[in-house]
Image (cartoon, rainbow, N blue to C red; front, side, top):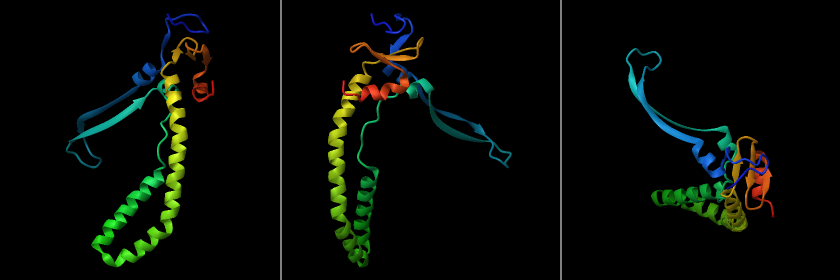
Length: 164
């Protein structure tokens, strides 16, 4: 049986992943409302989500992703290409733009790919560690039963990405 390393009890511990998942809720609500300045009610749907503070404190590490600007640039260039088909007179301007910025974009994509190649394995290791963690509500402490490490929730990311 797994026990907290600080208090040596097991009655107030839970897996970090379970606390994180249980702390997130979402829903849609349908009901009547009266718009400001009107007397006749109408029906509306409101959707939303919430997350408990503890769930936020124990959230898993974010997965590394491609740079947002490179994705936007690809979409813009595709839009320009479609626009040039529709209006051929802009073709020369787009061609100049693409030829002058393409090497820079290609270099940025290469650097982004290299960054992801380094960050993804680190994230995968951090997620393996995160999935092993437990939390003691009595002591507000996170611990890893495999390594016997324990720490405050605010120190969790340091532990997940440490070299140990």
